[in-house]
Image 1 (cartoon, rainbow, N blue to C red):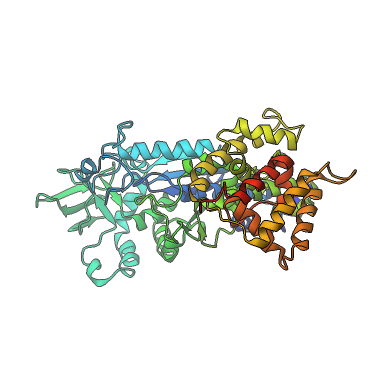
Image 2 (image 1 turned 135 degrees about the vertical axis):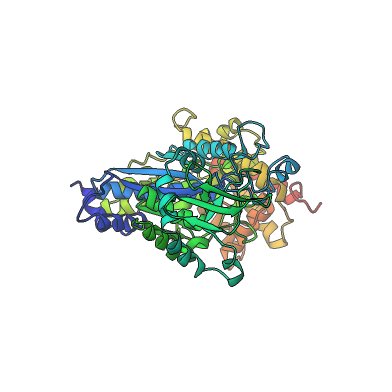
Length: 532
């Protein structure tokens, strides 16, 4: 056993805590199917969002943790519930009127409003797979439509017909009286309209595997439950899928948490063993509302990747999965910088610390070295001060700060410079507000400008950025700022148009001493201020 795998047995990081449940599950006997099956579900009623990514990323982290402490092979199945009827038209897709004509039809029958795929369901499945492939996930994809129509679900559907009363007993106990009167775990596909029907059953024949119901034209119809003619309601479908596929682990959001007992009960009623689960907290948008596929609120995957790396998003997913988190633009810069902080710490950590470090989980135990010699937050402020519109302009400053760095030797830094320019132009510049300096602040800024103009370099043996930071501190103290935070806040608001900013000595070293002196002169003259 390696040092890391030995340390993993006592590791406290949440992926290892979840993985240990699976080790215990098969402590006496390995699974008959020959592997441990992890599953994630996706409802393609709308475009994939970051919450969807979160399930796959977090499940993968648990899977990799399990592989370090167990020799049992693993698989990850990403299951798309694409046979569901489209209950409402998502707000963030084109051709709304066209889609309204196809309500309640299976998603893999509804026309694709984007005109690129066989159906809306196929389009959203392709988007899901595209973004999963972007992140390099190892997975198998499964379509509910294909599973139902090909017969892969036939055995469990026939068993559901046989054990209909047991399933209904579980379901009816969870429903209001009014809903109980019309509920059935089976949803037939209308032979006449092709719509998914939410209708009561007139008869369920467990011996023949057939159901009888009233079709939309008012006639009674009897059809077999096999061959894709019938699907299961979403709660029974959870448990039935677990039983059919022998799923060992699935996580889901807090909104599903109260249904765990139902899912498990139906799985057992159908002869399966309920999987291990993990319930995570929901992601919220900037206003604190739950992210919704149909509304399209919150960040999309493509939006995050416009402004930051895939790894920074993976870090955001790793942190505190059982705590609700705002998924908004302003979390991106911190996620980037924190990711690189963890990368820099990793090489000097012992085995236990490495397994607690998010980058072990993000990179499957093999994290790269960080090449971000300039923090992302500082790159943002550089873009602001330099009025940079592309990363080439940023590199003119970066090379002076880190002469050894080039886009070729520091590809992560190069990408971050481009991300910073885009983030600044789209998410910072439109909201910047400069203000005029107070009398005290103006005197201090003028003093700082004078000292920068007289600067001849850091004393021998001292770091340039640290020496400049000491100059900034000294000016603040000498000009009577009792709380130096007020001094730095003034610098940021007058010179950068923001209430927060970078460690200013490092910013001066990056932007340039003479350039910072010129920036102060503009700020004091009011050339930066939106006030006039």
